[in-house]
Amino acid sequence: MKFYIDNRQDKVELDKEILDTVKKAIEETLIFEGKPLNFEVSISFVDNQLIRELNREYRNMDRETDVLSFPLYEEASLFPVRMLGDIVISAEKALAQSIEYGHSFIREIAYLTVHSTLHLLGYDHLDEGEKRLMRSKEKEIMRRLKIFKNGREV
Image (cartoon, rainbow, N blue to C red; front, side, top):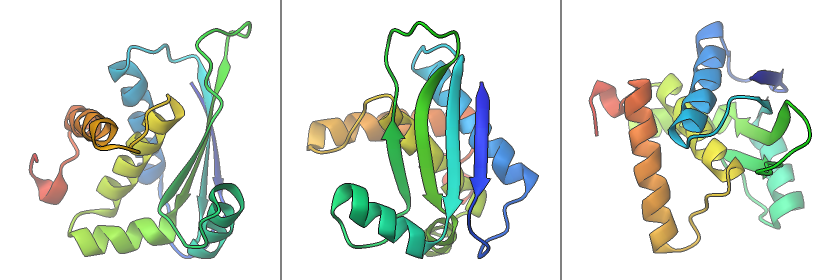
């Protein structure tokens, strides 16, 4: 795996543990889905203002969000290392949500990374069936990562 991490914000400190957790969350999601690990992934950390601009530009939604996914994944490729896609996380929104939901910032970042990686692999939550499937996968991957809400398994 190759990771390209770009911290484009200065509102929330991102330490090595956060960055290692992001990498581990992506790898565990790929392993869970039975995918090879020969991918490149770009992860950008931004603030609420920039993610709002991106959300408006790419999704026609003029509001901040916690994470955006830009998939590039294709099942077959001629290249030994393939681009999985881009993940954009609002560190500012993730911190606020961790406080709101009463769990750690690391847990929130890990969850958003798993969620976004599943989007990169083609999952969505547009209807209830898709949403249930995606949520069950997220929960199992978080269990495998041993990262739980409020320090306990949910």
